[in-house]
Image (cartoon, rainbow, N blue to C red; front, top):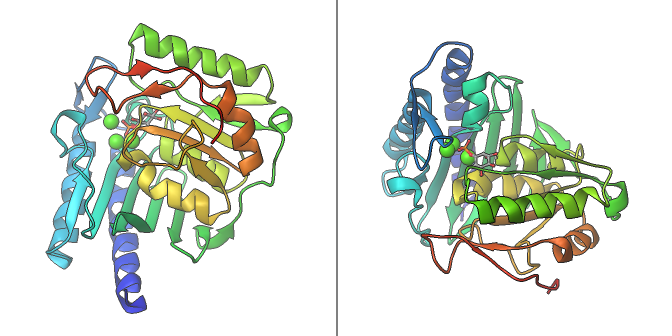
Length: 287
Ligand code: IPD
Ligand code: CA
Ligand code: CA
Ligand code: CA
């Protein structure tokens, strides 16, 4: 791929995300129309829908042959399959519950994947004016300055980010609670941000050391996974297997050593074998 093409894609997405950020900021502190999706806690607002429409429309005008995977245009929460074609993966607002409640951890996430590899990533929190970005092989940046994750190798000295997500299935909640418990017994602390993308960006900039989540989608991780890795972090499936962005499971750690300490503590949740009902799995050893 030509450097020139990458520059054009990157510049285009930075401009668009800045425009979309104005819409998010404008909607942040005003009353909005709130609807529910898979259950009563899975929310969407007219801003989520409008921002996704703006981003897809403008990107399609510039790059008519490219494909799109966007949270709000994917049927009933099911992501479209990622192919080798250039594909923009969009989460118009990551942290919709935060957005609804006026909690400032919200971000617009845009990634471009080619041959299933993410090459450009932008995560923009317009409320705090934090712009995280990465181009594959070129490092990760926050507001234009290079960022690096911590070098932490000890779970006992780590600040870990967890998440409950939207499922209220008792077995899933039990597994997630158990995981939090296993981690908090050993770590300095657990935090919850309500934004998968910003959680990974916090690892990228060294404010937290590890993050585990089950149940998020490709649009939550595509951009922030590249940003974390370009900042030096290690991302994998929580079992220790290679990360698959479509498998709805993420373990991100500042170092592989830290990931290896967290993985064996976890009860894993499988979303792939039976997409109607997540399955709680036996523990795996780190591969
Ligand atoms: C959600 C947030 C949340 C995470 C969920 C995601 P949304 O995305 O990232 O932190 O726990 O798994 O679905 O719905 O706010 O875009
Ligand atoms: Ca999201
Ligand atoms: Ca979203
Ligand atoms: Ca959502």
